[in-house]
View 1 (tube, rainbow, N blue to C red):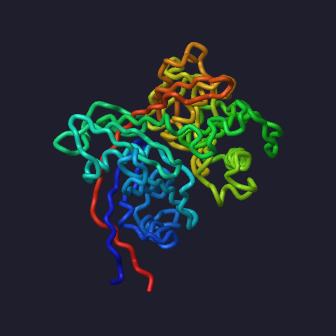
View 2 (view 1 turned 45 degrees about the horizontal axis):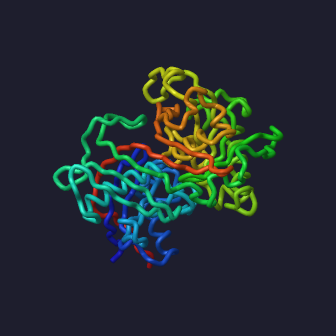
View 3 (view 1 turned 90 degrees about the vertical axis):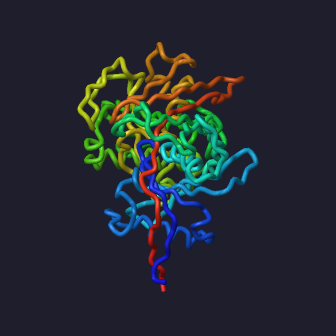
Length: 384
């Protein structure tokens, strides 16, 4: 047989699109598995013309779903970011948007006991060894698709899916504040010493003030992605943060060895700007602060789900760059935060408390929508 058939589901989950495959349908040998995944996506190739990838980071994502390896979980879920510029499959972190498709997938595939109108799915994310609790709307035994919940960056509306990420504090480093500091300083070529905040919730992130980079904080994806000098500065900040928290031994190796995580974001106080996808004016009063997030060395066109968790956590920790950028009136722990991103606004219900000098994430919930787009078989050529 020249080509192998692999059962495949394509889902739009949050503001990302990914391929969902059961663990049992992939090779168990890791080297063979990665080679198979690269062929499924058509990587490496900037168009991914010979596979299912969408030729950009937000559409080159994989969810591997398997039987639970923890007694407190219903399913195991492993996230993989598949590069289209290098033969790399990155398992170093999770994707919050793709996570929102795991609960509906588990319901539709009969992997959990289904209850109507809501089914709770406890998802063990193996990348971060944490439990995500997803509340999925169900109708006629399947995950509900139609609804009135709107998320910025996705046309139309859908059935809301709530996801609790509160178990993800210290997901990669074991600490909400990996350096135990609300702010640190790093040296950046051409800029000198910069203040940053490194926070680890859902995925680790490094935050910097937009003004310290000579930016407004409301730049469009095109403005950043066309600025080679700024892309280099932001990647250096990200890489040096990766070295600081031990994800790589040498920051110069971060782009190759850990291209996705930590993520880097630049933030600024609330201000008005235009949604680059629709042209709608977003007023200063609609957001608590604005942020632009980099992912896989280019700007995220909306905002990552795990990035939302980490940014929200940072906003609640006194003294961080994000906390200082937030409107004073919304620094209370009981308010829902509104983050302004390039395509609109994302909200998060998040709170943290200081217990004798140690910050604890007590709540971190976001709401997304997801839907199955197709299912069937992907054909993978077999090497002779």
